[in-house]
Length: 143
Image (cartoon, rainbow, N blue to C red; front, side, top):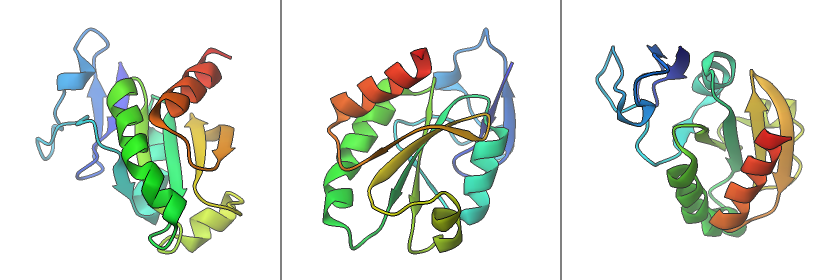
């Protein structure tokens, strides 16, 4: 049984391991739990996704004014499409959530952090193409 936080309403859903998570819907709002797009999270949703998802969460720390962040956004989405539902992809705007960015020591953007069970297990700074993002996540999850 896996706990998956809904990207639309942040409700925690229990998804049986024998059911295809890719087709799962939220029991509260009926939104798809996975749709191939990173979840835009605010400070509250960020904490819930880290603490309540059973699956690893990759967070892209970014800002609207950041050119490399904008260039990487479609690549991050392609990586989400490749790795969901085994991994949740989320985006946190460092301008809107400055306290969370500071708490995680974000000094340059874009920075991606892979969290497992709410704890940071790896980080990567700088824009990357989708293939490299997927390779990085898979290597970290294997290690």
